[in-house]
Image 1 (tube, each protein chain N blue to C red):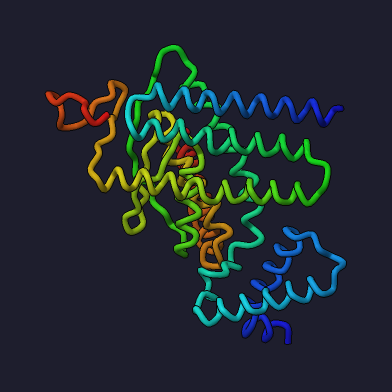
Image 2 (image 1 turned 180 degrees about the vertical axis):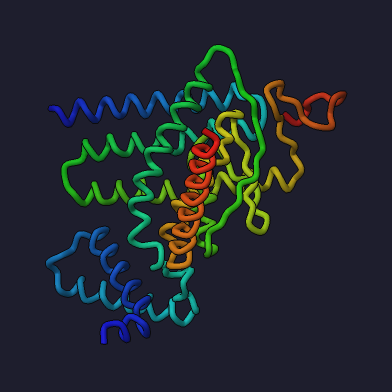
Length: 114
Length: 194
């Protein structure tokens, strides 16, 4: 009973983080800042969901498998995030910088690539 | 004797044992002798193949980061939680107050693996993403100017150095001594000034 309610709290919390991550993905202004919002979904959101599933499961083999999934999420998600960010950087996509979100060198051009 | 054994076959033994442990945990067959035998045979075959492919070096079987990496992962989990909360606040706040910043942070880690762990830790905390690695400098994109905390990231890098082999440990000790000496000097100067 206690475990059940704890796990449901974690499910709801994870869902909250995933939703706010997606909201950030829609609201943030450019490619690089959107990456940060996506980071929330695949670290805290997914890990809380997996933790909640661990509290729901009743035999330890399932628990071990869920723990392994959590570990591999932690190992692989930064690699893919870095691959995307590095590809954008090598492709010369300029980040918006500073509090007024200005790209250097394009005062006139419109943001067709944003 | 034991030292000699770990020297010639340490990585083989570590790889075989960890793979067998993984096989046991994933399959859950503890009492079927025939299946256990096949599991052992497949583990030995894989170890032999890994050795033939030349993957049993310090990159393929990184024994040097254990056991210090476990404490680091616990610490990192807390950091990830904190920065997740900040990014969530930014995503949910009615008015966006972002000030994206690019900074470079030096990576002092002795091994390539240490650098990878450091860069991945930076990416894993959601408000900072490592964009590029040049020689020993990591280029980082941060969501806000406050999150581009170079001193904090260097401190994180020192934590990585501290479990990254004997060289890293020596380096951290040396750096701490230097910092203490500097603090002592500053304190002495302050006293002299008074």
